[in-house]
Length: 166
Image (tube, rainbow, N blue to C red; front, side):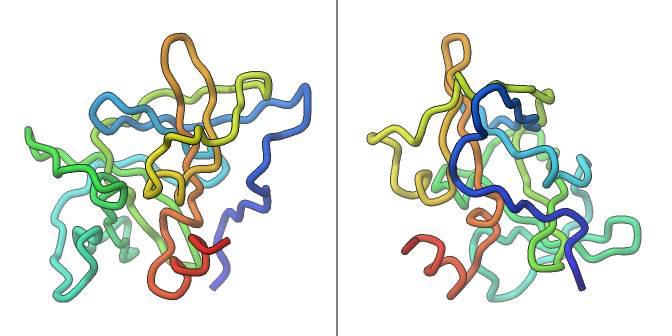
């Protein structure tokens, strides 16, 4: 099965004068961006089915319009504590390797069109777990937007080790 959207962009910033659209998501006070061409859906993840012996980031499976979707907790993937609160699981639908994923986040924000002049490589002090799944950052008014590498976020097993070695 072929993924509906594939991202062929490298880890470098777009050339001068170009802009890129990102769907923003929040984990606590941290702002992350996902390339809009990788996002298929935004939905509330309900009726999760546990997956025995799955990695801790896998919160379960769900049925989204007749398709089985793996629910992956971005907080756990980034080494953050689980969220306490209303239990409402906002998710961003993504595809990787022909499989559907729902990336669980605290909140889905807005779509931002950002120019290359606000882009920078990952800061040297960025935690290694975050660096492994980040393409870089955009400087915004008073905060950073951390751009997530969808391939790295959704990588598991040997694929994950290869991504972190690159």
